[in-house]
Image (cartoon, rainbow, N blue to C red; front, side, top):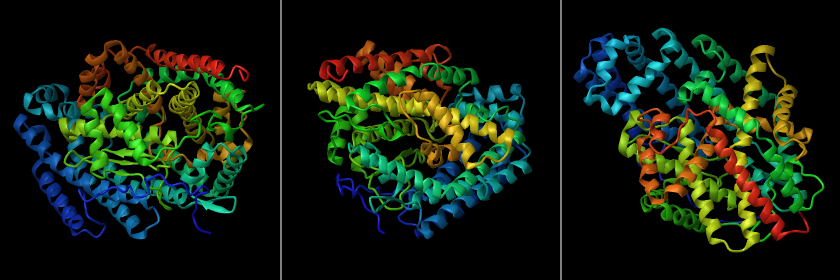
Length: 607
């Protein structure tokens, strides 16, 4: 049975394939081997020059070391990113898989030779370090050198760190790759046609309720058929994380993520408590949706159903999506639109649907000497337009920070990385609403935006609650059965939806296709962090107008050159205010108020 789509719709994105030649021309490019040898030689020279001598470096000596690391990290980043990007588009090609594995092993090998530097740096007393990092000559890497010292309590000996790196290649990295290949190769049968994951999930947005039901059942069947493999992967990686956390002395399963995100535990806890304390908003929205759809009850397969209103099922060609996004960006800032246009004009985007392409979407930082790349699976839905805007927001952030900061301050923490992406979505939504006069179409847009916000805030926090329960149970109970993981998933999901959506027991298996749980444990709360932060930022923009725009772009350009709270304080945001998150929740509440009022105006008989 061959892959197919039930509607055979084309969007114009079928040939939108990125051009990776700014990295390498192919998996056989001889420059790959040449650059690997060059990296090894540079690292050997670096180790010979600095190992055992970091504590002896003066300002100029430390500048020399950091400039040498810049060159090494940039070239190593080119190699690793090329392998990762290529693998994303075809997870079944043995040659591509072999290159990815080769780069994983290479990264671990050279990383072991460099680990001495951070260990020796962190071993130095504060009195020795402070005057060094405050020297003007080290401004390009000051925050990096300072922030790395936060990990000192959790670092091991050099030999132990080397072993951890070496074993990760055949440990967590290997299991994560297996998960990606397994889920990308999986096929789900709907009405006699074999669909990959991206295509079957697209059917959840169709107006035909029976089709959505069949698609949901097909996904459940496929996940259950792989329940042994998926449950085992989750268990192995949860156990691996527990062992690593214990070895490094992290207090909880989320502690390492918070430290990496430069987010204090108290701030993250306040975020989670605020969101879970406002789950009633979820029920309010889905009650409106149920009435508009004319259903007695909403089921799990109804959550993304389009409204039976004008524009409720509108699809967008790739060219239309491009124009919508660039128009919205240009209205905010011509400079922002100019950067976004580079992604289209330079073929920095991969949007085509391919049989063995992994699902989801992402933007890749790469390195400062090369522009970012964007990965999406474009089906033409309104949600896909917002996803494109989201990833372009990331891309703009990456481009600006890479141009301004260099490699040591390029990649922001996950929390503030989501700021630019969700702000970009908000610009597109606001532009569409401003240009739409028809009340029915406005209702469809508003409902879609609310569900985007729910997916970013409430659903991601409910997934954080799943992670918390899963990791806690794995550490306390031992290996978890598929049924136990289903129970945990349904528990946190039903807590969020309450009585507004009936989640069938079959929905219990849907935790098992979410890659973030494995590749980046603890990541998901960053989406809620970014969305609520952006709602606050957008209100500031509405208050200040054009004066806000250069301040916002300066925040993006700042990259990771300082702690998030200090960068955002420049635009009037206090991330250390534990009540801050409620402001974002109130903005969502206002959208639901608007939705209810508009629904009553357009369809008084249904409300």
